[in-house]
Image (cartoon, rainbow, N blue to C red; front, side, top):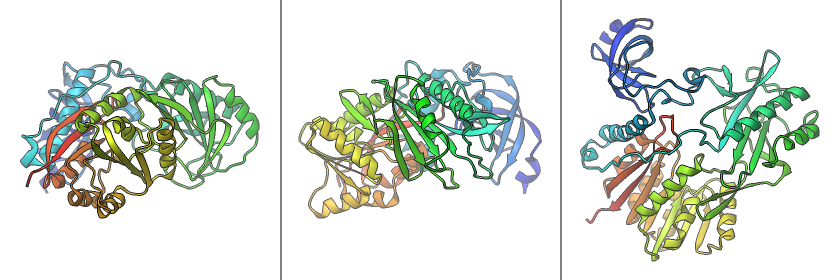
Length: 459
């Protein structure tokens, strides 16, 4: 009852910010009540207004920074406060890197308190230039006041922010998206309406291959055919000579998912050609590929270091996507087996391995737990397992399978410290956490990537 009477929406309170939360927000306490406050930094004194009261916490917005942190800077993005795509532009880059290490430490203290102090969490590996690094944009298309807009929805709303220059995106993706929305407007092609679900053009996706400068444009529509389609294709082709692939994806479902099931090549190639280190990859429209290739090379080198291969080991690459990690490790392994549940990714992965004459990599369509279990029954247990799961972490069935199969060395690439720490709570029954290496895959955001080395305990 105390929480409800002390904390009320609209109430204005002073707060001292004690730490940062996992989403980059400041955390303070008001009469022993925890308050999350976006945009506030450790050590700051702020005057704030409560915007939400939950059962065990409250949220607030900054009205005035009364004592500013020395790490506070003015965000360079004009829509930073309303967009929500970035959470840390108001911090110096060095302090962002420190905060990301602390996010990992906090997650460990919460989910594996017995092990937290003993785990070696290293300093975050950052970028030399933490701007314009994203190789792919996915901008929703809507119409407002007769103008075609493309951008992202403002945080926690259905209001589309028309974004001409997203400063974490590669510049060419901004240029092409802006040109595409002008063409849609000129040709009078109907734009999707989120409320009525009528209209044709839903989303503009642009991906650039950083090393080759090849660009793929994907137009997501509600139906395959629409008026002035051929003229639309010709004008898209003319935007920039770097565009080598124009693809249409059809998604007519009332869903927040970007892609539908039907994909058609409208012009040029089905894939774009990208290079990472000594490897080249052909990427189709729906194939997963890391969004920051510069940091991906750093990450994969850290995975390779952790795997410590001598040429004799067998490796399993789970959640393999288009095969990047398995290929990165291939020269140090006697055999690599990999799997993914997305058939298009496996098709790309097989082609990528074939292109590099990597005959000792075998790809399977299906879940990691299915294949690890099957292979153990066939007498195959990998020396090294590497996983790179989505934000939700490892499936419970895979954790159970890993604890049963017991590969000697296990490299866990994570994009979510909370789910990593939750998974470690179960994996530490059989494994010792040697170290965690955070890496800044998405500067200016609260996202924390990391590589964790686990070794099988001697029992």
